[in-house]
Length: 418
Image 1 (cartoon, one colour):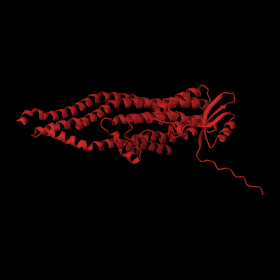
Image 2: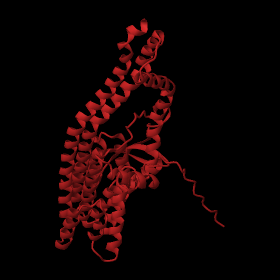
Image 3: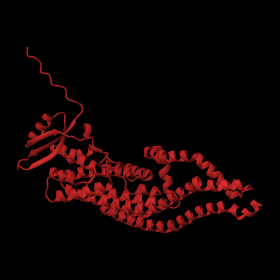
Image 4: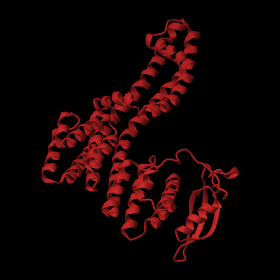
């Protein structure tokens, strides 16, 4: 009876190996792969027609060679993806193979996290996995919009065109975010300065005046009494406020994407007195741009609606997209359900209806997106012009009121001395 052969157990924890190989043309190519041991790496490389030159375990993350990462270095921003998509499209349209293009992108990208991910994607593609499937294995890096568009481009044979559309989409989104950020920078900075000035005066300046007023005796004016009380409370509550300033943003980052929080906060943002209109225009621009880009790339309508709804950044838009999906499933119009949601103005509904009737819905959606991009730019400029004088008056009013409250007892200092 022949002895049964036993397969050695595979190590469940894969290691990363750096390798150098000669390809079929004799060119030296370097990269990295994950495997149980060096033997598995060599076998995989030889199965791909490569001639291994050297294979060794990566030093990153071992012993004293642990890679030091700075805060934010592990994040992949939308700007990184926009630049990567543009370069990827240029290389693919120029005739470079996917493997070569991925290698170049991994070498030249500024984001170390994105470079490492692209190396893994390249390794997957080398084994015969499609590009979209390899991207889908990294959902924290590549959004569903990108994955599904790449899959549609692979199926239709126009991957280079899809990558160009992706690059344009990401670049427009980066530009939109930059406009909003520039509009919000000034009021946020002024508000922080105002808070810091008030806290500094209450902690360090008001106590000096309070001691002087106590030595002089007499009754303090009501504004001065309020200021002294606030100063005493601030000395007790300052540590608590400092802890809250750190804890609240961390907690908010954890809970902001929960359904219960979004259902309350995001509808309120749309109804906000000053910024609600800006939030609405941003959401409409993002919705129409993403939907138009996916339809133009050949992604199925139901799949497109599901993705753009979740990518819109607002639960109200997401609900509207769900209603549209249900309408399309039943064979009805795409634009009609949007009329029941107040977040979509009549102009948007009518333009989408015309796009459906003429068979140019993707083009009409891009026109809507361009319109709202211009509206966002005009609104941010108007808000900046309005907020600047208001914030200056706000800051000056608070500091001026505190100074007047501190100096009011000095006006009667001679009476207190007598």
